[in-house]
Length: 110
Image (cartoon, rainbow, N blue to C red; front, side, top):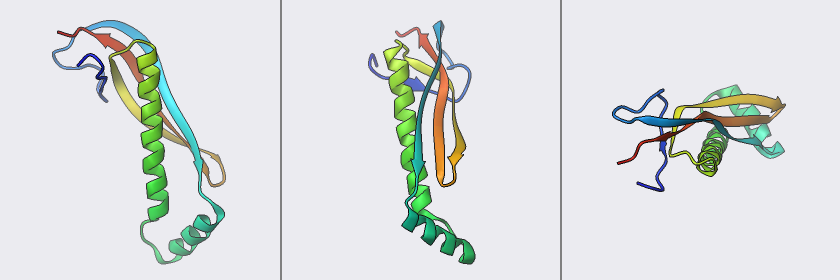
């Protein structure tokens, strides 16, 4: 369990003692679709349904932001992240930032 980092969306970990609050950790990525994919998405909007290309793009973006947040926590000496969240914001037309963030802590390990 020494290299394992615990990530939870709650503000504590049941049965664990927090020995140090390290602070905010985060990871982000900015992604955009290509022109051809945007054209297809606009056509799909007319008939409805899931925009699979965008769903895949957002999934990989969340994974990358999450991994960057975990790396940030590890470099700061944390072994857990509390209050984990994702946030998305539009940067420009067709481009969005995915942000993963939480509070890095050290918990007592047995």
